[in-house]
Image (cartoon, rainbow, N blue to C red; front, side, top):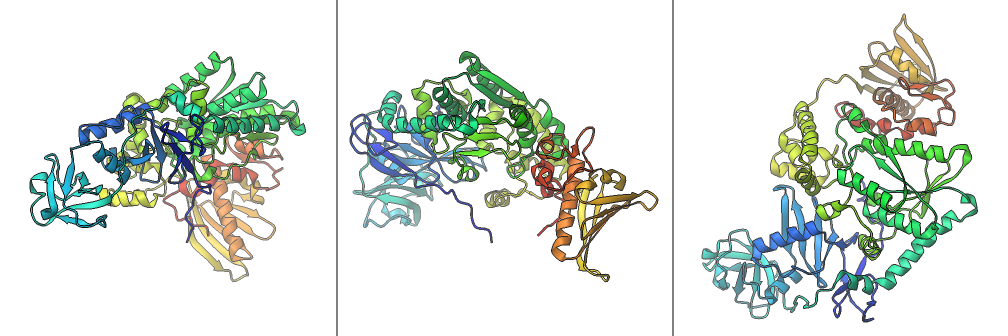
Length: 640
């Protein structure tokens, strides 16, 4: 059983100054110098300022629920927490007020109260969705209240509503089992979720952005100093003397901060490269070009043009666990630029804005790392330990223009059809760019139809995974949506047909079948497997390794003979991966860059030449071989 992946991060702390009513990243306030109270944040604790769009959503929901919004005009922080889609804790005035989440069933935002928010609303005089009860004890959290204990209730309550609950000395919230007209009748009337005896009120003071910056100035100065020293320290090392420094600029907030920090650290003209994947938001492309022009920055825009659309038929829609598009649209074109920079053994430094709080995969980022595909190219991550709020405080302090998408409802900036995009953001994308959405949605609907999947499968975002996580499986069951594509005849496929069995002549055999590729075509890549000979008369391709053999017949039959069971399985797996590489080659050229033997040709089609030393690096770098099993979901490939 696999262990659950968790963020390997230190406990994430946030403090709040009750005097100045500002969030603090250190315990002491930089304005009044008093100590703030500690707030426990749910991990990973990547707290941020709420955007204009998020404030509008909170206001709409508050007005809908309570016909009032005590949060209007207040500083609101959001802390991303686990959920089916976009899910954030709402922090205001040092209180964990509630949760803003995107409902994957209704495809709309919902607001859920927390105990501190419920108490503050009651103490602020909110009278809607309010139930007053007769209390005979403090331990009511989780209890069901009889209608006979309801003293009074507001006339806007409907069955299923979240309601505020108050008694003489207790305040909290719960769920109503009935409409207001029947709440006082005997029987189960409502269930209390949480109730408490504390008194909590909203702060009368609303701080300005400048005050939040001042309160955290000492902390930010230390962060900036460390980041600048990281950049300057790396570029000043003997190994990197006179090495060119580039900044990777995606148009997002993190790379924006990294770019500005690099300007401060080096005081020299910068070169910035931007990977224009051809499916970037128009706002992002415009922002990157404008920012670099205004700030007199040399921009190298690497364009993938139609690479995504040209490879879409070959690979199908990308997914969170099947990001073929990143290698085709980003890695390959960027590596071309970096290869030119490192030609002749030169070294090159790239400043990158990746942060460890963004995802599990990035939680172990080192200060620097070498590009495995481009020898001599070293990436440096000066803000790897920064949280989102620290990035934003830096941007606000420096008065930097930032991508307008952040204020339009996007937590992250990427391609407009990226599967990593939340459903909440995908719905927002549909509102902002209906013409782009229509193009992608039309493709997805046709793809789903061909796979025997419903429109609802696309509508609720199931296409964003190859293998659905538990939360999406549960959602599919609740919505009664079929998520299993129909098995179809494929032009190309590989299957294990005979398994592994002892051979009478010694060793083990393994049988399989390939469709859509003939042996005379397969021989173009057999040098990576071993020495080969093709008999046109017999219609068989024979490949020999040191201890084993592979036979591929014109009928498509594959026969492996090896001295051991594990070796037979390993040879079949490698053979299958090479066949997939041959059939699904994108022409991206990443394999060319890692092949020191120069034994690969990809034009007009992939060929492995006789100089191949079979190191396997080209296979490891290939997007087609990396996602071999996901590319052939209907075959019976299983390597274990």
